[in-house]
Image 1 (tube, rainbow, N blue to C red):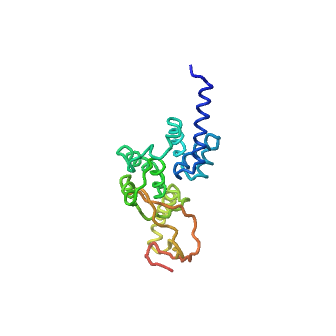
Image 2: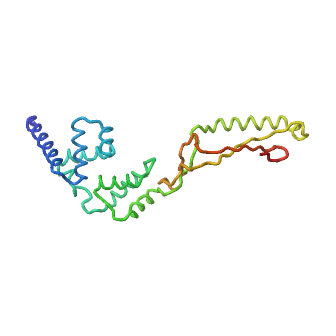
Amino acid sequence: MDNPLIKQQEEYNRITDLVNLIKSNPDPRELKRALAIKMSIERQSDEIITQILGVSKSFIRDWKKAFKAEGIAGIKLGYQGAKGKLTSEQRIEIIEWLKNKDYWHLDELMNHLEDKYDVVYKSKQSYYDLFEQGRVSWKRSQKVNPKFDEDLVKKKRTEINNFLAKHKTEIELGKMVVVFIDECHLLGGDVCGYVWGETNARIEVPIKNEKDRQTYFGALNYQTLIVYH
């Protein structure tokens, strides 16, 4: 049977080692790992830890697991990724990690490789290659109105088609004029830029309204196709 006093002493020694590592002015990567573990032991929430240290929740989980299994040796540099490059298995993990994300940032990928695998590439092209294998490419984002409702559009389209069919004779005889009105905006700026996104997916940025613009209205006669400004 395990002696609870011995287990308590072992846990105390592990935490002491952790505190000593923090005080020793270690490599920033080791320090970040140690601080995340210590804050978690002190019952700080993952949300607070991620905000203060700028790490992900998976970062906290992975290094807590390594510390529990190997003690202070588990979070020292060289414990993972000692060769400075990804193994085939690690590369597959990274590709899956990229595929399961909704948004991508180069800095996040760089930090993820350094924090979890202790890998830092000299050339950014190596990171771009990972993005490409994960079917993520550099493309221009497109704005989209979050209030757009496809069902309402279909309903309105049906109403218009029914109206035109009902009054077809009057329109053709010139007794009724149907005019379609639209507007265009000259914008003073463009909020959309280039971002990382899935190769075959459109990157949309929700925009309800844009400032600094001038609006012009125009109309189209449904029967004669004459345009009015």
